Image 1 (spheres, rainbow, N blue to C red):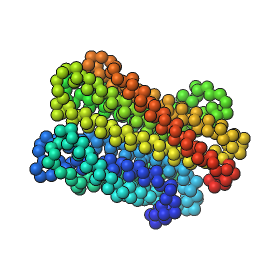
Image 2: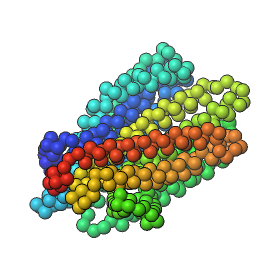
Image 3: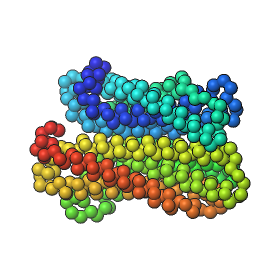
Image 4: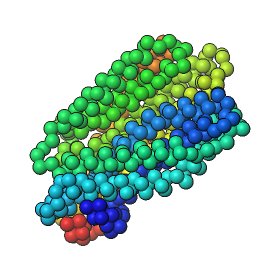
Length: 436
């Protein structure tokens, strides 16, 4: 089955581009920041510089591991579901579930290894640029030289490859099951993320306003709450669709398709929720911190500068990562629907009605993802603002939120409509025949 997996990669490389992109970006982020551990461990690095570099690497290590797993899992789940007919044919030909798992996991491991190797060069360049940012802000001495060593390399491969293998195993396990899964593990993870996230957010009130670690509990709590909301998103989406009055052919098709594909769209919703939550929560809390320091009249300390730079760099990179994953998931999900679009057009739907259906789906997904991400982000922002400034809402919070929502809506609707428009260029009969 491993030989079959390698032949499948050679024959159909385009199918695996989404997984390759996820692995490449995830490994690049992980290796870029973990190279700060290698740099901090060089001889002659002072203690202040080493602490700044190690803190940056440690914080992003937790974020990066979580995001890489979910990003690779979402793309692999879409990939495996799109191959349902192929997997069923192999099963009818005599392949056992264990052999199918070895084939899909072997493909995922090969793609993840390729992505990790390709990410080494960009990670080296990114690490040098990140070190320059810390040096320009005065957190790291100019005499510190960059080092890309074994910690960065092993962390990139050691996180990306197992994440791909685990995600592929879970995806093909769900596909090869003959009975409907009970979803016990998903339910446990959902309630665990919501419970731990809620506890982390509530622990914010145990800190003082001047505590250096005040921002950590609400930030991590908001992320965990967004993960729990993302796991609950398909169920909440189905409940919303049952109460959503959409008129016209496009609205009717959008509601029916979303209700049928709610579980398949979990990867899109997860990227959208994480993007909204992380961008809104971290940028709003950093704005509150900056305003509080300016109001006190005390110059920023090295620790405050370190925290600000770390937040902005981390948020910038991770938000871009989530945004790319959102585009990736939407592109893969929409491109796969070429046969569905062809069947709808043969049944009498016009290209405009199909585009209207895709647009209505994008609006519903955007509203659902932004709402859940905003609730999770708000759960972290309010406790932090109350403790830091004795007010419930930051002055710049609404502007930041509008900016994040605008980006999320533009990415979701733009990717869906552009991809659907390109797919509709294929004649309906040809689309049905090619995809059959």
